[in-house]
Image (tube, rainbow, N blue to C red; front, side, top):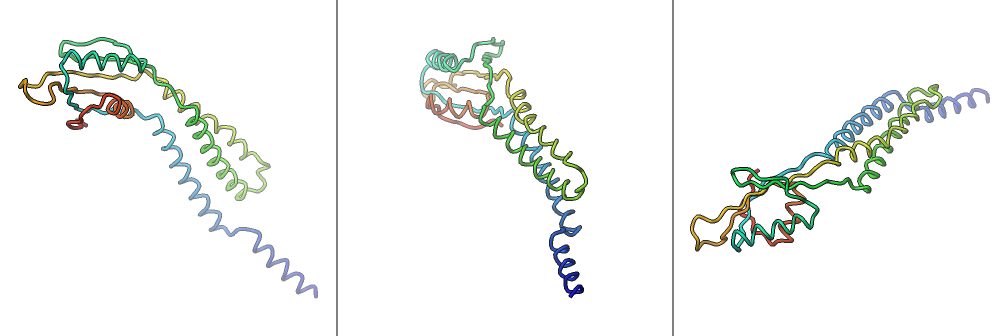
Length: 196
């Protein structure tokens, strides 16, 4: 009878304690997920500036006024222009509060997973691995800090070489990808090509 009880206890101990290879493989997967999360956080505030070429069927003056009005409505202001006719507009980019919270939540989930693995490997750690979860708000802070910057829109308007061609004006513009997409829709710009 004692022999049977001892065998049952041994079998239950084997079931409840994870084998070393399971713990090690879980640790490796958690570390790889952490690396992916790190690069995802870095990419969240990456500069996504593109240069595109558009055609505008209106005159040079009308196109210039239309672009200036649009950019001023979007809180951009003229910073200056150079001798080549490139006008530079600047506006303050703001961070998305939703994305900051989302990134903090992802960091929290990743740190909870890492803490669980560490506690499983070292059960005598007395809970200190859970302190790492306190660092999760740093992900949102990093995103907000990197996203608060002056966004620039650089543009150049040129007339077509022959007056009868359509479009009459070519717009070469360099700006954030999302800003270019919104401008293309709002002003009904005709894309000619992407210069990047």
